[in-house]
Length: 274
Image 1 (tube, rainbow, N blue to C red):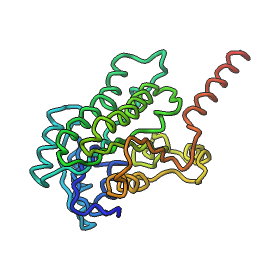
Image 2 (cartoon, one colour; image 1 turned 90 degrees about the horizontal axis):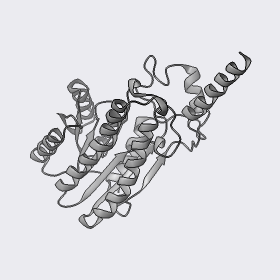
Image 3 (cartoon, one colour; image 1 turned 90 degrees about the vertical axis):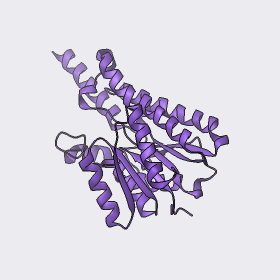
Image 4 (cartoon, helix red, strand yellow; image 1 turned 60 degrees about the horizontal axis):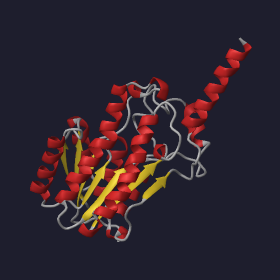
């Protein structure tokens, strides 16, 4: 039921991290996978890994914030495989340089995060829906940041909350076209970025604090997101649309929020005793 044989799936941001995990899961389920992103090297590596698994894959370098680049991605996919059955909007994020308390947030920081995570994702959804003449599945990769306080990256959380709202509205407006639109909101997932030096999980202590908030006792892996995406792309989810699925091991305590409160209390204590 969850096989994707003869289906074509596009994964933006598919060269690394969660996007790569999604692409690998799609390929393992039998899909033809097109991975898009800015790094040709990362895309080629992902394609090689999928081909080693016996899958069919294609790398298409794409700037998701450039609408003409997205249109080129769609054209290349249709030229190669004839149709788009599933579109996964995974590209997004926030750089360390864009992190800031809301009182200090600059306009350019706001614009970079909103343009990537909300504006570009919406227009990618729109372009994909226009190309899905026989229906299909759109999967947006949201975040638990859209539902929880997100100190120092509140603008990122706002974009994900906006994406959750758009997911619901798109599912209503495009349902008559037989297009299902759902979102996955992952908790903390291990990636090469957050485990790198200075990453959010770069030390055992940081990782332990995160694990301690998860009832299932471990952090997520890219394949956890990938396997859920396979279900949403499959005929097994044929009556599921407009949903934001929280994928977090049962965690309801964002560590960033707790850490922020701890730091504020420490600062207040210091100013009182000083």
